[in-house]
Length: 154
Image 1 (spheres, rainbow, N blue to C red):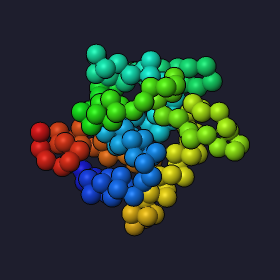
Image 2 (image 1 turned 90 degrees about the vertical axis):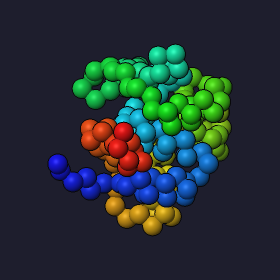
Image 3 (image 1 turned 30 degrees about the horizontal axis):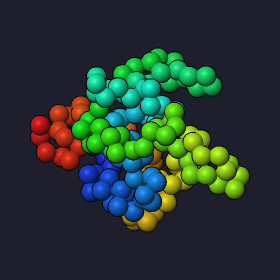
Image 4 (image 1 turned 120 degrees about the horizontal axis):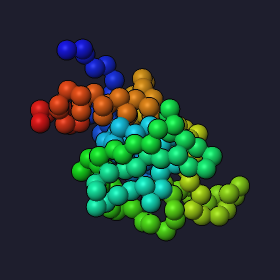
């Protein structure tokens, strides 16, 4: 079996602990869903199927998934718990805080905001290697090797 050299469960916990409150749910969903950062940025509430327990990744005006293929991603219990706690005021699941430049609430987060917040949380946690996309690898490695993202065998 190949050795995984990306984020550990301890790294994920440290990043979560050192992220701002706005970004904690974002990083939790990335780490426990396997979706790409761009897919999360474009996630709408209409793409969240609590009954079917899946996230739908689908093309939208101005964006399409990698390879242009829509897919459904099963929701890990940690992802579901995060999503159940989020407010549903806007069509986007993750929205930016109003700012001087963009004073209207409800605007989706940008990929650049996500990457900057992730780098900040990593730096504060003392983690020097890794990317936001590495959260996808963290999840997929554990799923492929039949372990929970916490490391114990299923």
